[in-house]
Length: 292
Image (cartoon, rainbow, N blue to C red; front, side):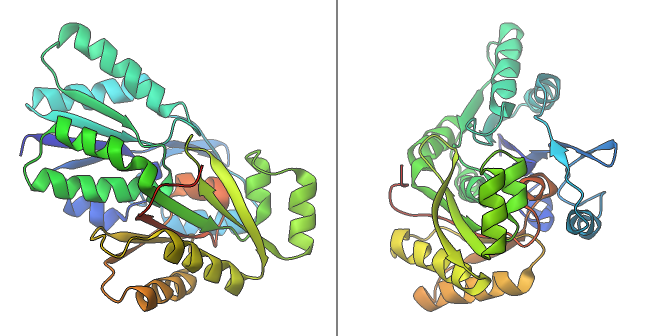
């Protein structure tokens, strides 16, 4: 096949899945700064993810930065030299400048390689919502679709891509500027668990609060029931921040609604976990129009 689908580690796909599809898929890791050093998120291949979650639970707060233009230029050039058409399905521009880095790299390359096919799609999605688009794009590539057709499909489907998640520790959202210090303090005292999604601009948006973990999982299942289309045959992803038992509870609730559901369970990457903390639980799927 003449396609290379490129994405970034914010896609939160399992390492096993990425390696099984490495003939078509390349994942560029986001840089993470933690304990005075920088690591590249390679989905747990070289830096033990359980160790990372242990650091988070000790109260250590990492920071992340965007992938620079040089790394995109290098990845795109290597694919072009191999005769590949490129589709980059990127982390939402509503939360990162990474997509802009990819766009600059594309313009630089096309100045010398005008024949190259480089399709860029700002997925307006994050985490497993971005991952869902990649999973389905791989199916299209294996069915023989070209880069232009895959990019056109992704543009059409991205605002029907839902990702709903609940967080356990509000301090990570506070550090990322998503909620105020007072809201985090009061919410923690009251055991409030917010449910968040991603809006039309690809930005995080709170959609409600519940008290307690069980109600948080139940609300995620309710959002799935509300927005999922029963005639949809796409994969569903359940994501978790080192809390497999909660992921199983959510997956079972989804199965109760649709016994035929094809569910992929994935642990969050270090990139996303840096911003939401351990014990985050999420579901992503293609359904009706995303809420604004």
